[in-house]
Image (cartoon, rainbow, N blue to C red; front, side, top):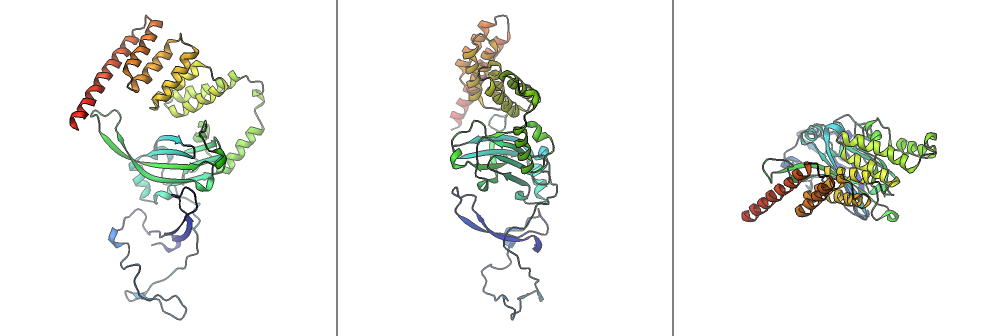
Length: 379
């Protein structure tokens, strides 16, 4: 092992939700990171052997292989490791991002590229690949050595308990989307990042993390620098916006959302459409566009909810029924989907696309029934 990089410390047990339990952590750093040792060769002898160790000045250290081992006395606590070498970039390693929350927790699930993860872990252990900075109101998650390009960065929708933040590498088994053989499964590595809401901020938040795309794409410093800059911007609003109306603020966010949607960044587009709707909540076009974003990210019930809200505001707009029908079909509510497309067809009789959507729905229903019967027979 590399003695200068070994450490021991008493730390909080991240699996204890109350944060009261403590564990003793002993970390021995290998001379060659990424090279596995045989499972039965971690210790050549039992750790609880009864040989005498020379812990006093008057005793001699045990000799092994006819030579005395050279001992290094470690100070308690983890060693400082703020100078991180570059191992992998965000764009290479992180492929998908999902998020969710409960009344007590915020959770992000980051799907990773297996090949790039393996390459990075040949250089450092996984817990030295990632890093997180957290304050009560702001959060930054990044790849160590590539800190200027964070994976997550922004203002939280409420307050959290920073010292209870943790992340864990695990795997996810799921069906391969679009595979020619239905039911084909894959197992991918994922990193779960969890923040604990502060006692006075528990409950559902309207927005988990306010992420500005410019912040993720541009080079960033520390979380403290980002937080100070955000506070400065709040204190010094741009003079040319002082007389803006709610429509002006909504239009600014809509432009960002439209650009993100066009680039295929559907989750970012959802965030911007949500911000625009805060200023103009009864805008049916924003609701329709956000419905499309939810549909693209597989959140079909939310897509349906937005389409139905837009329908209440502007029931004579045909596009709303297209959004509604798509969401219903994805939810396998085929008859309701056909009914939605029929309503759109009534409002736009010259458009042949409505009949095509109805036929696609019928075909999807038949295919679903065939798969369901095949599974029943297999059981």
